[in-house]
Length: 151
Image (tube, rainbow, N blue to C red; front, side):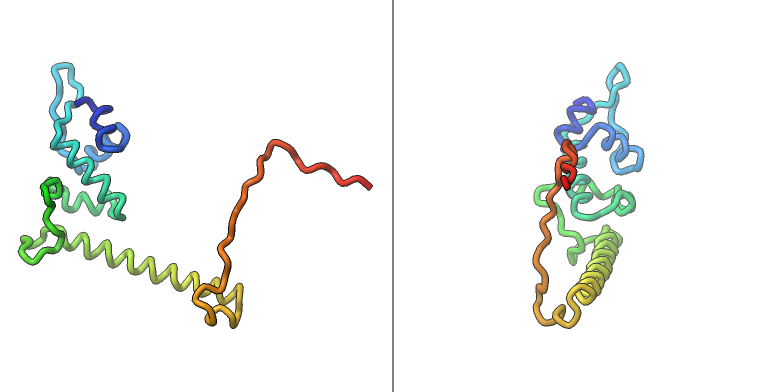
């Protein structure tokens, strides 16, 4: 498969595919006689794993730290991260670090929400688990300015 076909099959762009290759998430693919990248189904499967992990909150740097084991996640069924029989240093440290970062962000956002609710609703903020009504934002078309007021 050429780069455009492989990217489409994995749900990304050729530019993203090149980035993953540059950052070490993908081994360099084979090349055709004319020098074009030539991707096999195994590389497309690895691309799908990379996309799924990035969508789950991992960063490219997280994945770089365990890039030599990403191929294991293309197995059916994939091994569990942090499984009791997982070899030492098998990437569960990456999962633990990412979970800690997400937990810290959840705590920060919870405090931010509580502070905003206190400022907006004062004493009522703690009385109801949801002391506010969701805000609906509507966008106006910039096509026509408002009509001037007539005296």
